[in-house]
Amino acid sequence: MSKLKKSEKMLLYILACVVIFTCGSYFLVTPMLQQYNANQEALALALDDKMQMELTNPTLASSKATISQLEKKVTELEQNISVPMENYEIDRLITGMSLKRNLAAQSLLLSAAVPSAEATAPAVVTGETTAAAVATPQLLNTVQISLSVSGTESDMMLLADDFAKMPQIKLVAFSLTDGTGSFELELYML
Image 1 (tube, helix red, strand yellow):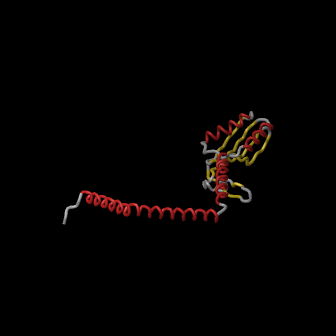
Image 2 (cartoon, rainbow, N blue to C red):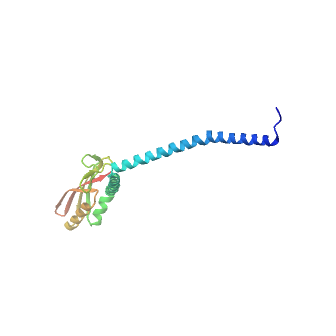
Image 3 (spheres, rainbow, N blue to C red):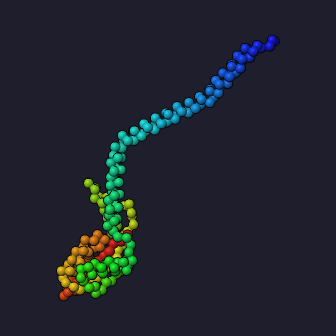
């Protein structure tokens, strides 16, 4: 055979480069394009599924809004219930309220905090339904308080009103006898 001329060698080099480029493109770019197309199809199917789910459950947005409103209501109600207090803090609270009304405390008896089975989380009333606030399933603790004070009848009535206004205190019994008032209270704590 004869030797190849310089121009023929150049053409062979160019042909080899084109073949290498074409094979590289075929083996590298084609799988990536196939993977890209598969991902696009999967994305389209996922978007269709999402759209179908939103159409089949039209109350999803309203349910989420209701849940967020109930969570806000639960946090508001939890703020009305006091945190656990020690006996000296309860003493300071009740005695301070008595002194504020110019009443002298004669006796103050506190029971130990016990779980209150009847006083679970308060119910939240919404438009047409009543749902129990189950975000915190723990029971409330109740402290029984017996208070005897001396002073004027009007000051004792004002103190009873003060107790009635406090959401964490329940006025169970109240009696007046010759300048002495007797209060039976329940203090609710988490």
